[in-house]
Image: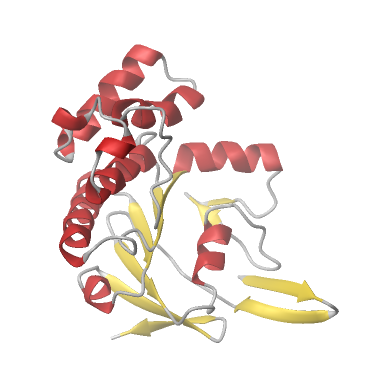
Length: 217
């Protein structure tokens, strides 16, 4: 996979022959210096940006040439995203935030509510389901964000520094939740992080450097 940015007639090659396979039930840590292109790789893998060469395969389907509408549907059905900041909607409760992706996908309100409640209970937030984000701790907010990302049963979870805005102890709790959910749901996960201690807890580490991925032993 290639991704090139152009500025003032200059080409900046950010991804240059990236090749990565994510397996069900596997969590891969993506590391690299700031500016190496980790977020760009996540955006291309998440169908938010088009590659300038190569393919993005999800469940065996080449998504590189899909229309914008089809890419949106694919993101909704097959991909989940967790970012450094939770991006929860402040006017909605934890339960409602977890219901929204399902309702956008056409799930009825009652069914979406039941599933959201089940998922929140699974991460220890049953008693906090009616609380809005402002009344939740940072770790609780991020756990709601993880639940929201998994609400539509995606095949792939993409995380961009999901613990980067949390203190060490809180981040540990969030990553434990993330690992447990990936194991139980058998989805594939790619997590970008600067935290090498966190990365070593995951199944595999790849280093993005000079536009290419290298395994870290």
